[in-house]
Image (cartoon, rainbow over all chains, first blue to last red; front, side):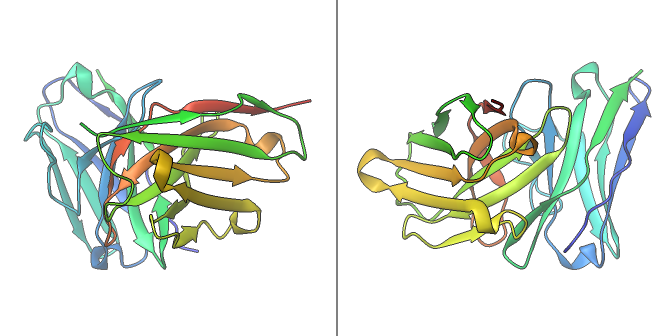
Length: 106
Length: 119
């Protein structure tokens, strides 16, 4: 089965840039979606199909995808960006989530 | 405004069947979107359970496929999840969600409901 690997945690200084990786075999050939999940809440899409930001998501969120790694970049990090982030792809009609990354803003 | 709401028992006995319903408002369940279930064990990551179209076509997580049944009730604008032979490992928050087709993302989610498997 297809697997997606993310770092357990990422720390970023307030106002600086955080990058969250999502590793998978030839993930560059797939559409990657990124979700933000805050404690006690349902996930929210922050990046759709690799690089598209849904309405209401700040431009500070961006995505890229190539080879075996997709990346979510959070620029000018704010305290409100503290959350768990998950990547997700489809493989053989099955949705696969990454292992999840906890982002801490220092 | 599309809204989804999960409902069902919060406590299920081991070896029993977990049954949840998702009620959709602000959209018709007959639109060409996939209606999904996702769960999250306490302190753990997200796990996709499966999806269903209004026509009844469905895809399930291979690891759960033998225990899962999903269905749609167009008259009530609802879809449902049944998971049988449950164990404590099935204790989780269960979310229902509307996902775009064609390998899309899940843009609309219910708030989630905690189901505990315990005697």
